[in-house]
Image (cartoon, rainbow, N blue to C red; front, side, top):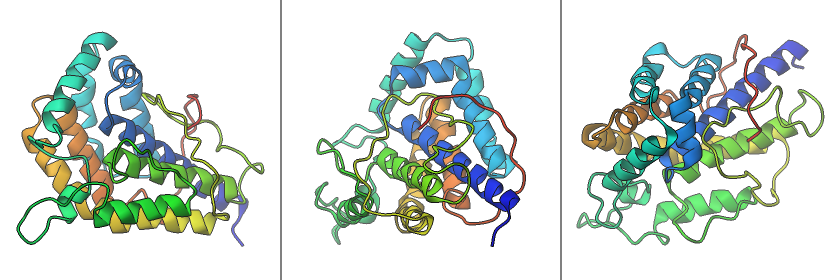
Length: 267
């Protein structure tokens, strides 16, 4: 049986996984004012740094954060948001796909002629949608389910419920002391989960990582890092690649101590 200290360390690691996945998700999603405020105020970078430290991400993996901080530290939220929207459109102009694509299907489901399969009905979209259904998550009808932001949000969602289902903390707790959520506009209500117990949530989190994110994010981030015109998306791509290639979002490696820190609203 795990000791109280081991339970606390496991909970602390899960909190960091939950928050890091959520912070990366909002950065890859359509830019919002909340994200722009997090970048201009420095809280997005500081929260990412805290998460990276808590899960022991290699220092070279977190190195891109300095360039992101330097780009926006003296800028207002308005100009930052305009810059983000311009660059995001340039990178992910669907269906023209000028530089890259935020959808897994474009990387893993091309047919034998090299043409992309239709979104929504691709193998990747179907498989990701099935994972959402197992967790009781209703995918948005306005976009295919295999968007990079949705897949990262799912990892965060599973870690959140894994915390709730675990033996650490108070029953039904949201994870103490509080999650880092700089830049998030969306509530994580997720519908009614069809799963229970930390093992089930852990399995779903691992499946999203090993069967999906690790299979295409390295290629997507390579395209973005090469084609981005601003430091934010170039360095975000390098940071995301380091996180995904390390497997820290779904690894069950034991943690050690965790610094106690932030006070932002729950995921």
